[in-house]
Length: 200
Image 1 (cartoon, one colour):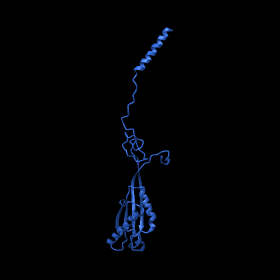
Image 2 (tube, helix red, strand yellow):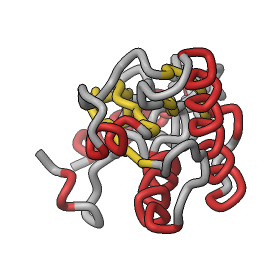
Image 3 (cartoon, one colour):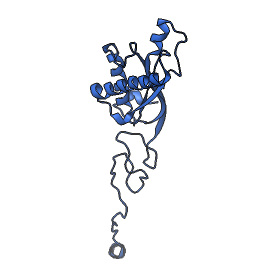
Image 4 (tube, helix red, strand yellow):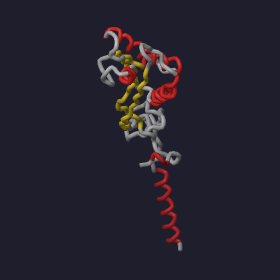
């Protein structure tokens, strides 16, 4: 019995010695930036694109994913004889142009003015410029489109829509054309449980 007690005491002493000599683990502070400045799910230390658009899908480096979008808009408006006055009947179409430009704030549009072949070429060129300018000014004044986003081009009588000197041909050629068709880059939105329609 005495021998057994000695063995137990020795075991306890051995365990005590081990506990006294073991090194205590000390956590070291992280030496990298664990914040996520643009809230894209990638910490600053690994983020190669620190200013990601809000809500965009990102890759492992924190950079936005883009998709190419082909879109465009074309509108033709017509004028009276020797006139550059735009009638109110085109207001709904101009509103659509303005909404298109709101959806694509990085694009510019081109407004091309045309004229019929009656009269001199020099006069018709000036008339076509006034027609394009009339459309441009209405987009600026009535629909708050920035002037810098509207380019003007006077075509004159060089590109007739209809040949001949009939009344129908003359009316078809007294026009202005609003045109934009380009390829845009659009940020791919990040999927979440609140946007199930985005899941592929």
